[in-house]
Image (cartoon, rainbow, N blue to C red; front, side):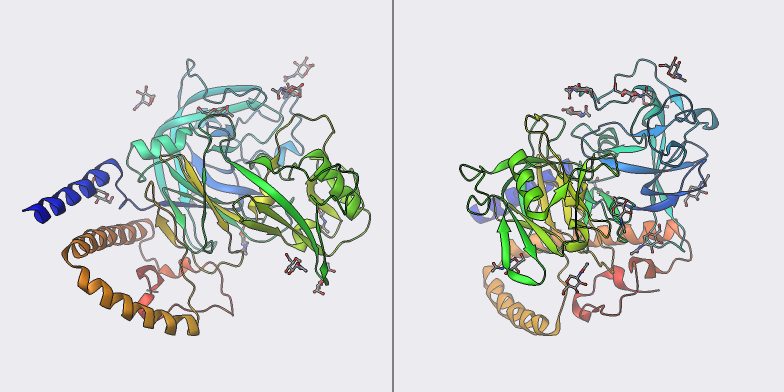
Length: 488
Ligand SMILES: *[C@@H]1O[C@H](CO)[C@@H](O)[C@H](O)[C@H]1NC(C)=O
Ligand SMILES: *[C@@H]1O[C@H](CO)[C@@H](O)[C@H](O)[C@H]1NC(C)=O
Ligand SMILES: *[C@@H]1O[C@H](CO)[C@@H](O)[C@H](O)[C@H]1NC(C)=O
Ligand SMILES: *[C@@H]1O[C@H](CO)[C@@H](O)[C@H](O)[C@H]1NC(C)=O
Ligand SMILES: *[C@@H]1O[C@H](CO)[C@@H](O)[C@H](O)[C@H]1NC(C)=O
Ligand SMILES: *[C@@H]1O[C@H](CO)[C@@H](O)[C@H](O)[C@H]1NC(C)=O
Ligand SMILES: *[C@@H]1O[C@H](CO)[C@@H](O)[C@H](O)[C@H]1NC(C)=O
Ligand SMILES: *[C@@H]1O[C@H](CO)[C@@H](O)[C@H](O)[C@H]1NC(C)=O
Ligand SMILES: *[C@@H]1O[C@H](CO)[C@@H](O)[C@H](O)[C@H]1NC(C)=O
Ligand SMILES: *[C@@H]1O[C@H](CO)[C@@H](O)[C@H](O)[C@H]1NC(C)=O
Ligand SMILES: *[C@@H]1O[C@H](CO)[C@@H](O)[C@H](O)[C@H]1NC(C)=O
């Protein structure tokens, strides 16, 4: 009797978990790239999200601190906005009067209460948000509609008003999770670098309720969110190394007192906040000074963000080492661009501002956030991605990267698989029951994603899952081919 009771209660536990979080719900993938936006005639980089009925399409910048999702009012650039190139930088203009689904809410209390982060003047209301999934430029998009969601219409401000708010009280994540449109408050981000300040070509993506398994490589590093505060994604930096591309022996630690005798002792590791609210990194004063003296940098303000500029070109990279050993390397093209601009901000000696690992850092990193369990994960981002693999992210689970096959590894895997299979065979019924539940869930998710794909794009071919044609592209082995690889 005892074993049976044990299995029954194990099944009950599994069932309970799936009641709280339905991890079969497919995630919502929203790409980030340059696109045309409502009432502007230029292309702007951001998340493809529309608002209202009929849709007014915008290009929203993901913010990890703001909670509200906001749009620039059609009058945003009239008057005194200090936003640079206002007419072509707002991410679109939203006119609530043109939307049949907009309802104003004059009593709405904004969840963005932190000082200096709110827009100067906004009106609040509810409207339909339209999250577009658009894998391939030449193909159509399909939409996920989030009806009656909170919308902030920004009438005045000095920063870009079109923001998708992904702070700890994100209205959008809350709505999606509460309405079972995603499995829970789970969110993943690759910010990309296809925008002017970064000067790159690679586009980014948001995944609500999931992650893109093709966008990062293992290992995945886990951190705890701080429970409160505007920036809840904090990590600890223990070292920063500058390397020269053509001189492997020229590595210099910005923490090293021998190289930088102006420091009396080795600096302590420091806490930094992950943010998309600025591009350049903000590092402690003495580390910044060491960067300045080692690379011969000058203060500069080409982009209004105080990024340091070098007097002469430097061909090298910068590796940021976190206290758990995770290393993130900013490659030469990011560390110094052709105009000698770096992604490191100057810093006043007495500044009390937090330290930031900001957008420049995230161009190299995939971020996966579990707001249900207050944890987040970082992994090295895959820059040249050739597939999009939205994968449900179950609260409490650890994301795993898609394993890129190579011939040798595959042969080894085959062998290991056989051995593991033999061992598992002896363990028995418990594992079988689990496997049955797991594969069942997976099949439901697979069918559901396929169905949605068909709904969205009637005569669709799934070739859109290949983002670009890359010659060095390695197809996966047939036995490991997930369903969404199949072309139709
Ligand atoms: C979980 O989500 C799937 C896919 O959306 C759905 O088919 C299923 O009915 C849901 N299960 C529960 C218990 O809500
Ligand atoms: C990024 O998106 C743009 C569209 O804004 C597209 O033209 C470009 O090819 C994309 N880049 C890559 C590397 O896929
Ligand atoms: C907004 O984008 C969607 C998806 O591409 C498109 O169907 C719709 O026509 C666009 N709306 C406007 C007003 O351009
Ligand atoms: C612009 O600023 C001036 C001076 O502060 C003020 O008088 C004027 O009302 C402002 N205009 C708008 C449209 O806000
Ligand atoms: C918004 O507020 C900031 C700081 O108070 C100010 O510098 C800026 O000029 C204001 N912008 C507008 C459009 O009023
Ligand atoms: C978002 O909400 C969190 C928690 O409710 C709060 O700590 C944070 O300050 C808010 N963000 C802003 C920009 O106010
Ligand atoms: C808000 O901004 C003003 C002006 O830029 C600055 O003096 C003040 O210290 C800021 N407050 C906070 C809490 O950052
Ligand atoms: C929209 O949401 C608001 C606040 O959540 C609620 O008061 C209102 O009744 C909702 N409207 C509709 C039409 O569902
Ligand atoms: C280097 O970066 C700066 C700031 O983003 C930009 O203004 C400049 O055009 C870039 N230079 C080149 C050659 O890309
Ligand atoms: C210097 O750094 C580079 C890049 O991080 C690394 O590949 C190389 O092994 C390092 N050289 C030494 C001598 O540690
Ligand atoms: C940096 O050095 C590498 C290796 O020699 C070379 O391929 C690359 O073109 C150099 N980059 C610049 C900007 O000089």
